[in-house]
Length: 400
Image (cartoon, rainbow, N blue to C red):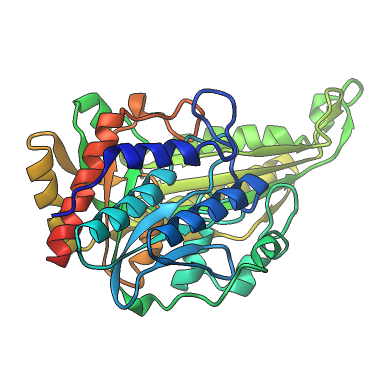
């Protein structure tokens, strides 16, 4: 049995949110490779070493705490969205650290811990774990840029002095990730834990409509090649055309829009926007892509706009490992009888990439009011501890 220390766990979890604290609720601003992200990783490295593991940074900033010999790997990520919550990713990292400490105190089997880099997508989609898993080539990643035009290659130079080689994944028997749900279902049902059955797939790309910049007061409407009107038409059409393809669990988002020259009295000459969609079936993701591209071409043709696409990023839907899931389910039934369920994860996680290398599984805990990727993100601390105890029970069962 692994007896965790809830007070130590919560203390560390709250301390981690001091790095990049937003000053609004418990929110954090800790994007990948930012000063606050690097400070947090250096603090984590010190905690990892104090727990008896060997801290190791790889070339892209993934931080591992390595046990001697073969071990189970537990963790998540510690970077945040531009306006992020304190638990997204951080929960899984600190939970892994506490499992390591409690396991050593109990004389248990070795466990390693990890904080992956850029899960939140400043540059790509779960960038750090995707590179480690071979889902994204390092040279391709280095060409990715953030919204400010900074390349991944440039950003990761801040870890160059700390970095060693990539960690050989064969040293790990499997990967477990604890995370907040980032949705409303557990919270609304009054349940404490979800054991993830599968993680949805994702596609993400940038689309550009190029029109003609002109005077907003003197250019007649029939003469305009307004890039924003192209976006508005595109958004209306895809919502209509997806209707007979998607399911209630399918989601799509235009989350970033950049107009040029972004001025009140100028007809926009260019719009660059993000297009992201998620679903549990690869075939449906492909059909949605076809609709998106056909619709964008139709809008561009009818409005006299030029059309271009950025690089397509994405990950396939993945089922969680049955053996690891069974251990999580058995532990959830023992720790939270009648207050847990098995469920799909609509959010993307590092476990998707890890599953390419080894058996992987996840458990999730409720998000209050279903809020995440926002400063208001929070979870009842009793649920955080319950999730930790479920994770500890699963590790004990797997290593027993």
